[in-house]
Length: 138
Image (cartoon, rainbow, N blue to C red):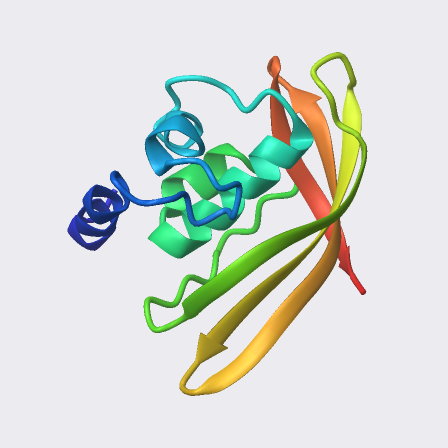
């Protein structure tokens, strides 16, 4: 974790989690990002991955990505301002499932220009934990 990321992480400790769950970061995505515990559902993993983008945590993004699908370069831009995550739909991805899908919309702003990512993401179990496989943009 870089110094910049660590600084952002400390600031987040007493705030609501960036993932939009309404829970404090410490009781939401932090245990997954710090690999203290595994995300129990595909949706929880999706939320923690969004939070990792907010915190510029490339290590966690790689850890949470299936190694067969993880790109060599992950684009993280510290100038991107993440504005929110909305979970649109989930299919399976519960504690007893082997696969799951999460449809989400993530909003951001870069250099004054707003954008949104609307994606249907696929998740699978790998080494007894949820991992991201890939996604299709809507």
